[in-house]
Length: 253
Image (cartoon, rainbow, N blue to C red; front, side, top):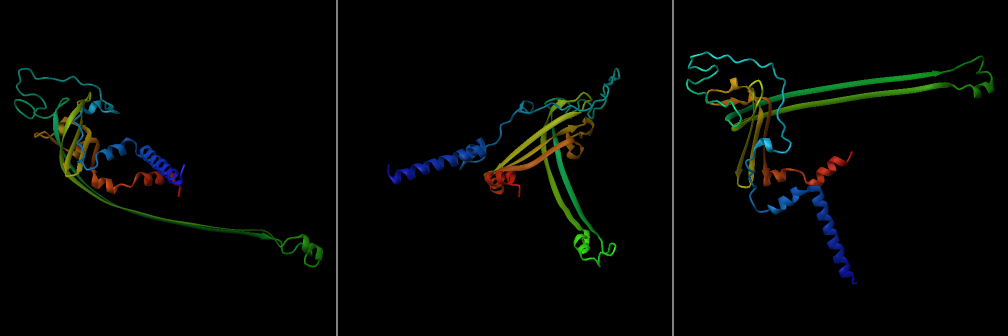
């Protein structure tokens, strides 16, 4: 076998090892990204949120059920904001609009300093004429114990955060809790060129907090989960490579 063929074989083995390593690190994600080179990011399919892997019905502490009272021979229904029919979401499958209005600002600064210094010194300078006896000077040490200790620490930390998000998203009622509260979840995807913007809203709302136009402010959503981000070529460039992420996790320094 010639040296050229041996080098080619070694090169093929090295390339295969690199591909296997990349596949192991990136998994199916790397294969999918390679298959989508030059194509626009695909939008996610519209699925039932309750059938998604890992979905669990929300369980919250519930009060004792109360018996509803109705007024006989009355055309007006208790809790209704319309004379004929309440258009607000109230059952599974209904839609409502969530007004996401987040304006957060935090400025925190901490400074901690601590210092301590200790010194211990003990010895024998003279013991029954030790200075006059030559052999005693050799036996008795001048200092028995000498110890010094110094410790200091200084810590500084600061947080300066400003976040603002204003948008609307339609959500669907996925569950009605025993006390009448609604579990809602909404997802919105918008593709512009080769970038997809994603907005996800989920949480628990009270029917009383839903406005007459079937909208609700995000500040009135309990257990709110709001995610705003994207995916595509720009997002891919902003993320560190898989190898760098692995080294950041494994390296202790």
